[in-house]
Image (cartoon, rainbow, N blue to C red; front, side):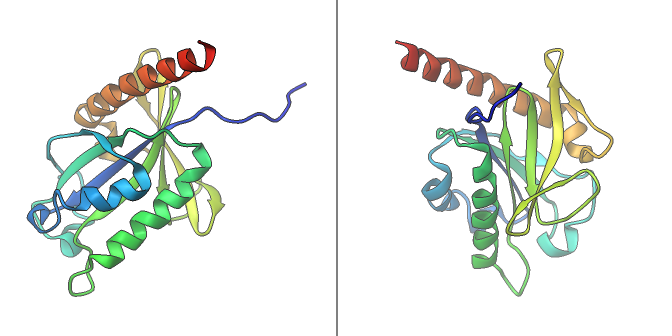
Length: 182
């Protein structure tokens, strides 16, 4: 028989898409720190060319950065991360268009889950308009995409970054566990 138990802590991540980095970067890091904690990993800019979905709103050429943070969180905090990033997007609107797109997620040993406001067949409703999108699973020492995984998350560039973040997460969890045991 199984019994309720607390979930393991997870690694918050954030994907930022924009064509106007010079208008908010790196000053946005201070605002992100208030909820996410200190950024401990920041990827280089990655070209975003898998879709033109955001071109009209964000302009072109769109670049992505992926960040991870020092603070580990409980999985249910994903809702607060999504609501906070939505508020930031609204705060920085220019002519009723977003300056950037912020996609928070949580990474664990087994999976990457992104938060979204969009319902779809494979997404699980959490609360307050936020849905959880199981984006990737980690199996046999590599990230595995699913039929609905976003095209850019299927690619080697993002998966290498997520592999690095996962390595750092594993080290933090091992250190945390050692501190609890010791």
